[in-house]
Image 1 (spheres, rainbow over the protein chains, first blue to last red):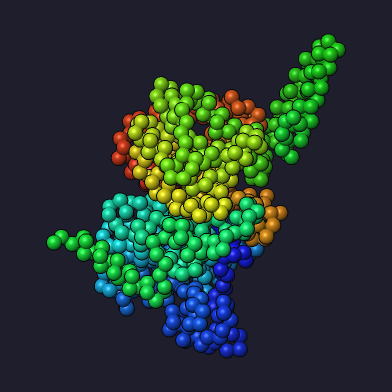
Image 2: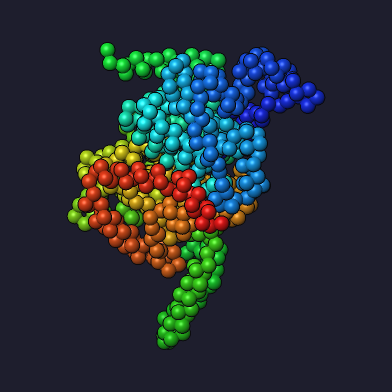
Amino acid sequence: MISFSKGNTPKIVKPQEKNIENPDWIKCPSCRSIQYAKQLEENLSVCPKCNFYFKLSASKRIEILLDENTFEETDTDLSSFDILKFSDTKPYTQRLEEGIQKTNHLEAIITGLGNIENTRVAIGVMDFDFVGGSMGIVVGEKIVRLADKARLNHTPLILVSSSGGARMQEGIFSLMQMARTSAAIGKFQEQGGLYISILTNPTTGGVSASFAFLGDIIIAEPSSVIGFAGARIIEQTTKQKLPAGFQTAEFLLDHGQLDKIVERKNMRKLLTRLLQFYSKGKTKA
Amino acid sequence: MKNYLPFEKPVSELEKKIEELEQESVSKQIDLSSSLEGLKQELSEEIKLIYSHLTSWETVLIARHPERPKLIDYIRYLIPDYVYFCGDRHYMDDNAIFSAIGTFQGKPIMVIGHNKGKDTKENILNNFGMANPEGYRKAIRLMRLAEKFNCPVVLMVDTQGAYPGIAAEEHGQSEAIAYNLREMFRIQVPILVIVTGEGGSGGALGIGIGDKILMLEYAIYSVISPESCSNILYRDTSRASQFAEKLHITSKDLMQFGLIDGILPEPLGGAHRDHKTMLETVKKEIQYFLDEQTPLNKKTRLDRRMEKFLKMASYETSLNLYQSSS
């Protein structure tokens, strides 16, 4: 699990800070400029002034990555239950309820099949607004089932991560999802399946230390926070000052842990090319 | 000076009394054996009583007891002719994970585990058993070596967690753990996992996939330490004991959840009071595991390992568990 704080890492920003007087205007938490909501959306929720990346909802992400009207969502009926009857600052059931309200989805990941420039893919997209995008039993299950679907349908697999890590409210059950998702992805890859992992802000803890870093290709959005342990924990443990840009996508690229950093607006184009290379390579001459 | 846990106070008092009486008996040359007998009886009753009512937090303290048998104790006992290996072949040798091959009942086995030290000096050298990516990479390398020797692997888990350090992040802690999680499903020799002390989150699971998963009676296994859980939610660790309860981290909890295959009973008063008995229990269990595995061919073994993990904590299994408990 992970928690975020100041330090040298980029700010984690709350869901779009809407201007209270006028919901049509949104203040950029990075450069503080005021943006017209509609324009911001057209710019894929990237601040036109300072290039700050607002979080993207899972549905919006699907919309910008896939061909129109090709997405068939799967496992829509799976919803979480409070297996440990867990309660902290609020009951877990309340957190789930709030997640549903905020995202209009039953869980922190949407999975299904769809096309990217006519290539069929199995795709899963996480939504940070659902209990911090954390992985519990249902998130794990949906990824396992999606990897199986990709294996049986011989389609490439794409997972877009946005998660604080394992969902501690489900205790040891959430830890075991790290093993389950890794197992299912291994099974898929063993049979030649291509898995592209896309890391967005943030991808940390039990998610980064399982399926997110098992991609055959790993791509990140600019300035995303990516890491295993939380910056605050590292600072407290090591009593050292964290280096500039620590745990950002750029930092990871420098350290050889990513293939590429790609801007949101270019992601679909890149995926299209990769998928075409992949399918051309597979077709018998 | 013995280490007593806070709830062991009555035990420490009784043991002190016994010691005094024994000294008195020697110095004054008088026979106090009958009162000594009585006190020893009382002591054993007291320990039994305390250990039959442990809270989860008390179990955490036992799991972390500094005098608990450590990896090296197990290795010396199980495979006295051992040869150990170093390094991940990329960057460094991580002392937090130790690995050795040796003869167990006439055949080689490979033991790999978190290497908590026996004293402060060793603990600093071994980073308190908190591994860097290099430790996980060494571990998987040596599991592959075990394949070459066609010898079973025993993974001994005892860590607070993977090390939260700057270099650890720079060198890909996430990738190292994720890679192991996937690759351990492909290691062709039998793997027995024993959580001997602390099963701390991803750092534990990173050497925690196998054909059979066991926990010592007072070991713990958790997605997050009770302290960190309290720290994240309340910005301080004062609620750790509460969260120890809520997170369900004891061997009994995991057994009930169907996430482990067995609990190894500890000697009266915990493994730290009687190493020999504990080591012997573990030895017998390894023998039992090897006998179980012998008739299996590789494919069956790997299929079962995969099936086991895909089924445990699955949606269906967990939902059934949830419905039957409420």
